[in-house]
Figure 1: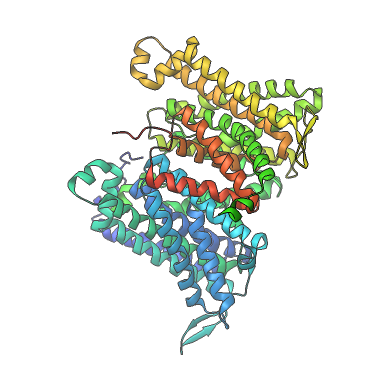
Figure 2: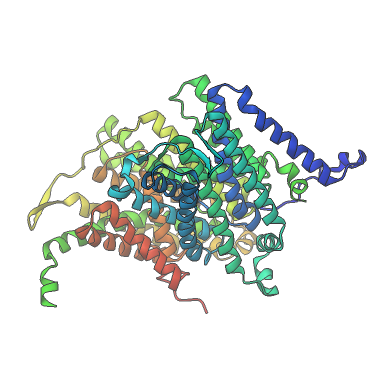
Length: 333
Length: 295
C-alpha cells in the first residue's frame, strides 16, 4: 500500500525555514488549539473532542502495523477491550480507585493479549494475518461475554472515575476539561513516542518489512521477531486507549471487544491516511463528525454507516492515501 | 477406562453427529464460495457473511409473498448473485492490480453498508420462518426433523453440481484456467475480468442459497453474517486457502467438533473449539490441514 505522495513541503523551503522548524511550529499550533478547545467548546463537543482523541490513539496504534509494517490488523478491539477491562479490574479491586494502577493494569491486560496474538498471527502474512487477528479478537470477545462472574457478561462493569493524583502533590477530581487535558497529554506523549519509534532503526526495519519482506529476511533481520515486537507495541498503545476510554466513560462493556471496534479502527486509518500517525486521529475526527452530522440531520435512527460505507469505499478507490496522504512524506521526515 | 466410555452418552453422540453434518454441509456451501473467490481473484470477501444474511432476508420476503420455500431459495440465490456481480463491477474491478489488502478493505465497506441497511430496513428483531417440510422421525427421545437431513442433502447436491460444472462445463473450465494462470488464460481469449465477475456472482449465489436453507433452523437477523463469515474464514484457513475439497472437509470436521463440544459446554462456548483448531493448524500446518505440505 505504498505510493509516493506529493511532496508539499517545497513552498516552505523558499521561506528559509527548515523542515524541523516548520514541523514543530505546526505541532505547537495544533497543540495550542487542542489545549484551548475545552475552554471554548460547550460540554457536548468537549466530550466529543476527548473521545475523538481516544479513538485517534487507538487508530494511531494500529497505524504502526497497517502503515509502517504493512500488516492490517482486524483485531485491535481485543487490545482495546483488555485495556478497558484491566482498568476496570484495578478500579474495582482497589479502594480508593487509583488512576495509575488502572493504567498499569490495563497495559498488563493488553500486553498479555498482545503477546498471545502476536506469537500466533505473525506466523502468517497479508490477508491471513488480518483474518487471524480478527478471529483472535473474537475469541476474547466470547470469553469476556460468557465469563459472567468475572466480567459482568453482557452488562459489563461499572465503576467510578478515579481522581487525578500525584502522591503528596495533587489529588483532584477530573472535570471534563481536566479529563480532556489528561487525555491530550497521554495521546500527545504516545504520538511522540510512536513517531520516535518509527524513525528509529527499529522503525526502519519495520518499514523495510512493509516494502519487501523477503529481502529484509535475506539481509539477516529476524523478521518474525520484529513483527512480534511491532504487534506488541501496537497492542500496548491500543490498550492505553482502552484505559482512557474506560476512565472517560466509567464503564467497560463487551461491545467494545467486538469486531465493530476493530473495523472502525481500520476505517479511521484508511480515511485519515495510513503511515502518518496523525492521519488516523484526523480520520477518527472526520468519521465521528460525519456521524454526528448525519444523526443531527436525519435523526438518531438513521443508519449512518451506510453512507459512511460508501464514502469509505470511494476513498479506497479514489483517495487511497487518505485525507492526510498528501503530507505523508513530510510528516515522516 | 470403562467408566469413561460409560460416561459418554451414546444417544447424544448420534444426535450431535447428525447436527454436525447438517451445519457442516451449510458451512461447506458458504465456505466454498469464499474459497473460490479467494482462489481465483485473491480477494478475501469480507461481505460474504452479509450476502448469506441478505439471501436469508430475501428468502423471508419471497416466502411471505408467495408461500413457496423453493421459489424463495432460487430467487434469493439469483437476486444476490446479480447483486454480487454489480458489487464486483463497481468496487472490486477498479482495484484489480492494487495491493490485495485493499480488496479486504473494500469488501469490509460493502459488508458495513449491507448490514446496516438491513438493520435499518428490517429492524433488530430476528425473524422466524417455518420449515418447508414438517415431518419428523424418532431418534431416541427426540423427534428429529427430516428437513435438516434434506438441507445436508441439498447442500451436497449444490456443491456436487458446482464441482461438475467446474470440471466439465465450458465456463467452469474457463474458471479453472483463470485460477491456474490468468495471463495465459487471457492470451487464450478468455475474458478474465468477466470470469472474475462471474465467480463473484456464483460465490454470492452460493452464500445466499445457504442463507435461505439455514434460515428455518435459527431465525434471520442482521448479525448472522459475521458469525458465519468468521466460521467460514476458519474453515477456509484450516482447509487451505483456495482449496475447494479441503474447505468442505474442514467445514464438516469443525462442525462435528463443535457439535460434540456442545454436549459438555454451552453452545456459545463451543465456538472456542474451532478457534483452537485454527490455532493448532496455524502452528503445525499453516498451509491447511487437508492439503499436502508444500516441499
